[in-house]
Structures are given as structure tokens and as C-alpha cells.
Image (cartoon, rainbow, N blue to C red; front, side):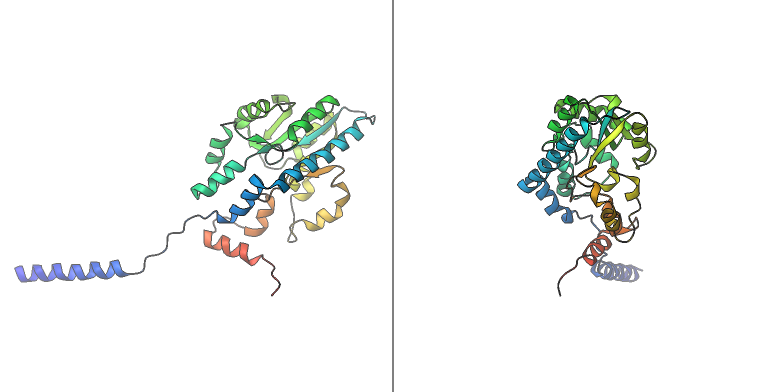
Length: 265
């Protein structure tokens, strides 16, 4: 009996050793390295700063020109908030440092702090609109429960129109079409400013296989006149054309990103 018991123990040890020597499936960790260069550029590049000043200088000139024109309704400008008026690159940087995927909970942890900095030229532009008696509306896809901290953030930086009546957060859908239409019922929208094509018109919401470049070409005369677009290489609706579907592994996402690179060989 003792011999049999020792044999069983020995066999069990061998089996355990064999199992431990089997190659283990690699843990699929989320990797944000693809965000590294774009976030560094956004946080430190003087070219980024220059592009924002350039955009808001042009926006200011357009508002000055339009403010003297007579219209049947009062004039308004519509702006996005994130990466248009407020700099959320610390949130992107923290995602990289923590090697974590985007989540609404983590995003709200950031916005609740009301610590985003103003982007170059943004505060001055809001004050210019105010001085010219052009109402500025903030249409954002931040949620309604972020409104208080968002207004606190805007007000602390000296933005004009940092009041609830000028802030239109996300409601039931991400599309900003209905919110723009509500403003247009009472105001003549003379300019829209944003970092995403969807900030300007619903025509850009279904971009197609060409990523929306055809739509941009058809409406090229609006850019710099009615639409002022700002640089955001960190994220945007353009990402949908990379992945097409949810639930992809980090390796699958990396493979799709690499497949889109056009080299010369």
C-alpha cells in the first residue's frame, strides 16, 4: 500500500512538472504606445501651439467680418470643447502611463477635477465674440453630469459664456445635429469651430471607405470660412475607419493600424 502511494505521488509530481513546462498563453495587455508620439507632439510641439493660434486668428477675422452684416436673427458661434477650447492631453498621457484602455469612468475622473488648461487663443476668441455681441455656444459630447465641472473649468480660465444656458452637453446620441438645429432656430450660426468633422455638419457622420476625404473635397470652400478645424492627432471619429468593429484584441488593433501604412517599397 505504501509502495503504491509513493508511486502515485511520483506520477503526480511528473504530471505537475509537465504541465508547468507547457507554454502558457500570453496575457493580452492593452498597449497605448501608438498614442505616445501624438500625445508628446500635442503637449510639447510649438507647431501645435502655432496651429491653434493660426486657427483662432482666422476665426477671429471671420467673426469680425460677419458681425457687421445685418441678419434677421442674432449671431452665434458654435464651438466644441475638448481639444478645441480645453486641453485634455493629460488624460491621454495618463492612459499611456497606466497602460489602460479608455473608459467613461476614468474620463469622468479627469473631468471632475476641472483642471484642463485652455488651448492657445481659445480664451481670447471667446472674449472677442462677447465684445462683438456674438453669442458663443459650447456643444460638447461630455455628459450632462459633467456640466458643473466643465463650467467650473471654463470659468476658472476666464472663458466668456461659461454659463449653463450656453452649454449643450451630450443627450441621447453623439450626433450634434439636433443641438445645432436648436441654436439655429433662434440664432444665425456664422461660424463653427472644432477638432472633428462631425463638429461642423451631419454630412460628415457617414464617412465611407475613403474616410470622408471626398466629403471634405466637396466642401473645401467652407474650411477657413464657415468651418475652422483644429489639429488633434490623438483621437477622433476617424479612428472608426481603422477598427470597424468592437472587441478586437490589442494585437488585432496593432495589426490593423500597421496595415494602413503606405510605404514606398
